[in-house]
Amino acid sequence: MSLNENLEKLSNACGIAGREEEVRNLMLKLMKPHADRIYVDKLENVIAVKKAKKSSPKVMLAAHMDEIGLMVKTISKEGFLQFAKMGGIDDRILIAQKVIIYTSKGQLQGIIGSKPPHIQKEEERKKIVAYDELFIDIGAESKEDAGKMGIKVGDPVGFDAKYAKIGKDTVIGKAFDDRVGCAVMIETLKLLEKADCNVFAVGTVQEELGLRGAATAAFGVDPDVGIALDVTVAGDVPGVREFDTTVKMGKGPALTVSDSGLVTHPKILRLLLDVAEENKIPYQLETGLMGSTDAARISLTRQGVPSGAVSIGTRYIHSPVGMLSLKDAEDSAKLTAAAIQKIQKHF
Ligand SMILES: [Zn+2]
Image 1 (tube, protein in one colour):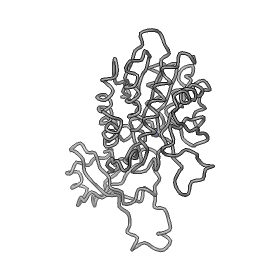
Image 2 (cartoon, helix red, strand yellow):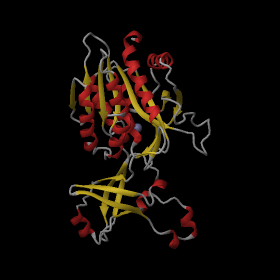
Image 3 (cartoon, protein in one colour):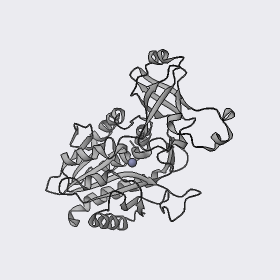
C-alpha cells in the first residue's frame, strides 16, 4: 500500500493519548510484512524489529500513535458532557466542532456547544471561552439517557474530520501529529527491505502527555541511535513571521537542530545533512521551537543515546484538522532509510 493509503487509514483511526488500540492494531498489521519480529511492550508501544546479519548499530525509530483529544469528565443532569483535555489544545479551536465519543457500546456523534452569541453580553463576546465552560451535546435528554446511550466518565473523544486529498501532493485530515510519522516509519521499513541493518521501529504511546511511551520503549530497546519521526509547525501562512519559523509545507523534511527538549547530536545532524545532499533530497533546518519530540526522551535513556528528529512541516497542528504535503512525507522516509544504511560509517 502507498504512503497515501496508509496515512488515510491511520488518520481516520482513533488514538486519543492512552487509548491508542485502534492505531496500534493498524500499525501491527501495516508494519508486520516488513519486519522480522513485531511485539507490543508493557506500556503498549508497538515495536517492529529488523535484524542485521552482521553487527551494526541499533537504530530506534519513534513515531507516536496517540493524538490530542478530549475525555468525558462529568455528565450534567440535563445530559450534557463536560470534558478534560488530553494533550495541548488551544481552547479557541473547540467551539462548534463535531466530535466522536468512543463508548464501550460504539461511536456516538456530538457537537461542542457554548452559550449562543446572540444572548452573550458585549464583553462576553470578546472573551475566549475556556474549555471548562464548553460542553459536548449528544442530544441526550438527561444524565440517565446519556448513560443508556453508552456514555461513561473517561470515554475518549476525538475530532470528526475525514482524510482527503485536495491537491497533487496536498492532503488534509485529523491527527497528522503524528500519524504521518507512523506512515513515514512504515515507508522507511519498506525502503529498508533488502538492507542489512538493525532497526527497531516503535509506534509510541502517550507522547502528547509528556513523551511517556518513548521512555519505556527506549529503555527496553537500549538503542545506539534514536530518530523521531514527527511533525513540526509549517509557518507559511498569513500572520507568521519568518523569524518565528522558516519551515514551509512542501519544501522537504525539517531537520531539528534544537528544540525545547533536544539538541540534536552533532553526528546525527551531520549524517542527515550528508545523506540529504548525496541523495538530492530537499531539507529545511529548524531551531528554537517550543515543544519537542520522542527524540528528547530517547536521548536521555540510560547513559544517553545520540538522537535527532526528522519532521514533516504541517499546517494547523494541534487543531481538529491539519494539512501537509505527501512529497515531504515521502522524502522523509527516503532520508531516514538512507541515513540508517549509512550509519555504520558515522559511528
Ligand atoms: Zn507529535
